[in-house]
Image 1 (tube, rainbow, N blue to C red):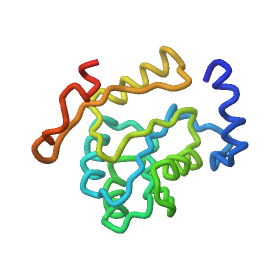
Image 2 (cartoon, one colour):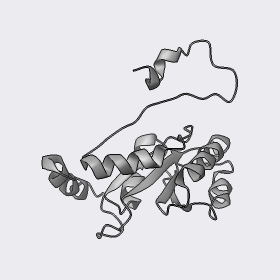
Image 3 (cartoon, rainbow, N blue to C red):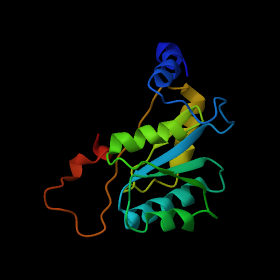
Image 4 (spheres, rainbow, N blue to C red):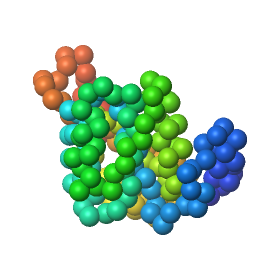
Length: 165
């Protein structure tokens, strides 16, 4: 990472106890982290889309199980042949706790957070690789395109999705 943020971030993370399991960054550019709690059905859809977007790439996928009591563990296991996937566990409920656990488990230069109710586009991984290679950013984000398991809720306006920005 470039700039002041890139040089300070590792020190700040270490001061707060967020030290990767390995202090050596692995050759993969990034890790995909998905935090989940009792949303096995949505997680399965997310991982199916991610497996399709990965197309034989070996990036690590860490699914942080935030104390699930449903089939989350078996859903993660179901993708062990398709993805380089690992289960992390955070017993204390809360998205920030789960994301902090993902940071502790990550040993790549970048970590990409993907929500368990998201379905990445087929070109998602390509866009991330291109962006990292072209700009070496300290951080980045992407568009949000909603999908629905049922009819769209009446309160959700299409303009909420970032494809309209």
